[in-house]
Image 1 (cartoon, rainbow, N blue to C red):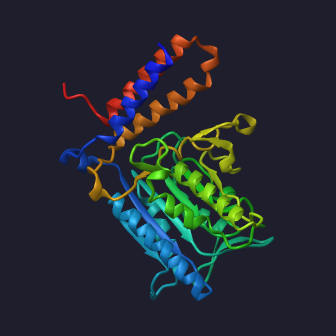
Image 2 (image 1 turned 180 degrees about the vertical axis):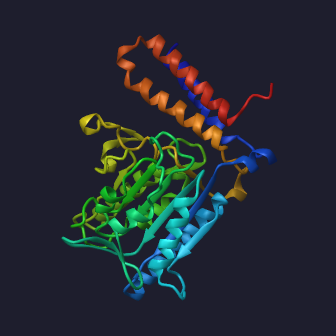
Length: 341
């Protein structure tokens, strides 16, 4: 089995990802995803305008992905934003078999007592937020993405949210690597941009994963500071292996890590690579069908096997390695384009 043949197999798999079409039965059985966008206290008209633009971008993401969107903090309500957010997190906590994306837009603060997301009215701390998303029975491991929760904190001083919120089945993204990075964070703008851009789709499957958006946004954030000849005051983190340490974008080459996690832990990115949303304008292309829960579970297991195979590549002959890899890739392709026989 030579590398040229495997390249051909890889191209075929990509083609299968891009040509999967809708059937009524599949649409009914598709795994569900929900998006929640929370806008904190703006403080100034300039920030208010900026945050409104980011929310509009997420509304476009939800429209393109054809998923329900809940926004908090855009309009006045009888209850406080904190109460509404807590109620929403409780609903998410109780929802099963659904993937949830929660985007926090605004400002953050940090001191020796707490790290807070600044809401209109009472704030919420990282520790309080962690209690709001606790489930009685957390996922047993990080391998399945169909009922995961993604929390993207786009604020300054957001780094401690990684340690507070980390856990099985969770992808945590923060705009900063620590609470001491207290200047305004621009990462949120670029993350929203990435979720709407085909350029973020590194594996060309017409979807953008959390990891792909994180890598794109990190790159664009760094470019902003370099263009402005300013010292970078924000360094984003992603955590999905439950160790609470987080990983920066420089650790990845493409979507694969180039370093190993400490103390034998799995590296961040394996779950975040599998949690995706469709990207682009659905009117310009055939509508993709979300995979069913069973298909997602099988896909995640196969991709975990691919990762394990790559890790032991040096211990196998070239022919054995590529033979096993081909078998796994063909099974993956079958999920996206099942045989009609």
